[in-house]
Length: 256
Image (tube, rainbow, N blue to C red; front, side, top):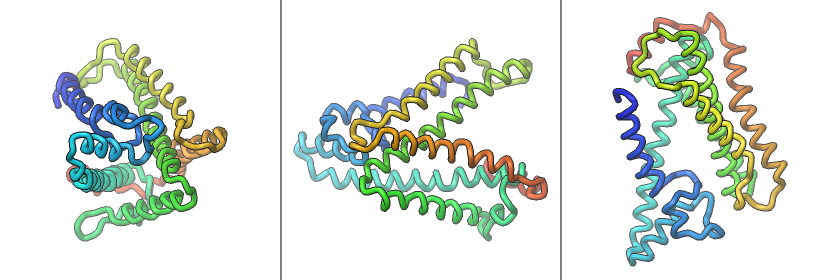
């Protein structure tokens, strides 16, 4: 995309389509709240509840299982992207900066970072055991969604702060687009992200009758581990001997 205009157009279309009709996350999008009462809305099955209500109203309930299969297929496709994308980026930055040992930087015969993917699968499987340890699946899914969003918001906070700093320290650096009133834009974005971060510590009304402080502690622990401790370990444990600039350049070419 060239410039903010095309990004705005694409973002607007995406918002109208995905935010008003469908979302894979358990949030009360407009279409869902229109047909499913809040006291009956499930944190994990809200999308299918909406589809079922819509199809039942128009007398085409037989489309519900078809929609379910389509959603699962789309989710699997998205999952594959999530599996390959971050691991590819982690491989690239590890070769450039030495964040991972050479064992995890190895590729198989087809050029796939299999050791990183296997490690990622093991860690994900361990985390998924929470579904077996906590009886309420909706609560576990909600907690994971909140922690994921919190980690994203940390990145946005850092991004807004970095944008202001770079405008001051490198004002003449050539850029594809220079935002007017950058400090104001970043201040609004930073405040909104910080507010969303705080709101994430407020449990949903459907979370259950558990302790609020236990919920806050669990979210805080997950945020501290994933948002601070693990990045700090990457920085602290990296070694110059783990760098591989030559292979990093070839990896960059593959990604581009």
